[in-house]
Amino acid sequence: MALIAVTASSPEEAAPYVESIQSRSGEAKVIMASDFTSLDAAMGGVSGLLLCGGHDIDPSYYGEPDDPKAKSHQPERDEMELTLVRYVVERDMPVLAICRGMQLLNVAFGGKLIQDLPNHQGTNEEPSIQHPVFVSPGSKLGALLGAGAIYRTNSLHHQGVVEFNRAPSLLASSYHPDDGVIEGLESPEHKWLFGVQSHIEREGEVPRSFLSLWEWLVGWAERYEDGDMG
Image (cartoon, rainbow, N blue to C red; front, side, top):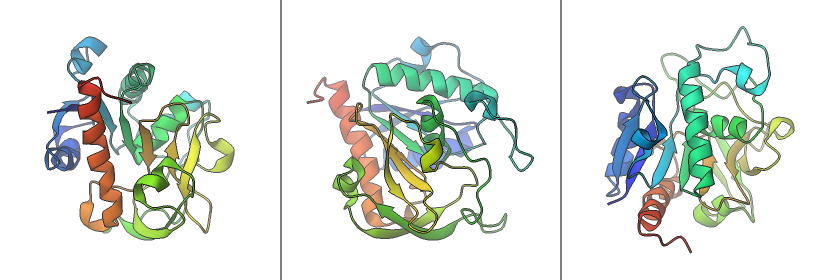
């Protein structure tokens, strides 16, 4: 059974992601900055990485001043996750990054973020809204989900990636058809790396095809564990 590292700020934050992994017959190991001592201790036995949602990324990591509309930062978590991304990318390990996680991927590969986007989150009472997402033909995400289609999915983020601040070595695999905000990232060099803005752990709020990303993560983590990544 594949063991997947899940980065989070607390066990409670990690819980829905862990449940999605476990319901696909995977195992999850929650890694928090407060407990992080070394890469060896954190990643021992791990064959996949999930970067989950959470706090804003400290803009000092992408060379920008703090925006007054930004929410609280956790630089210790940022540093830990950036270290983990470098570790798993060097080993070509499967990575799935969700919301903040996708934004962190962009920063890790040299991109930047818009610190406050209108119309991509709800209210404190109803944080999730629905909006359209176009999945690009020819993308690996499109091959997995179904390309050239517009889906309605959830949105809970106020920071994000657009074309001008996308990391040059990453490709946009999906985007909002009205404002161009990037909703998915992938790497042409690293086959087993996906980032999505949609909170797919909130399984009732996303199209059923998006849930195949969980099967993808657990399945490829199992293959990585077995040394079968062909």
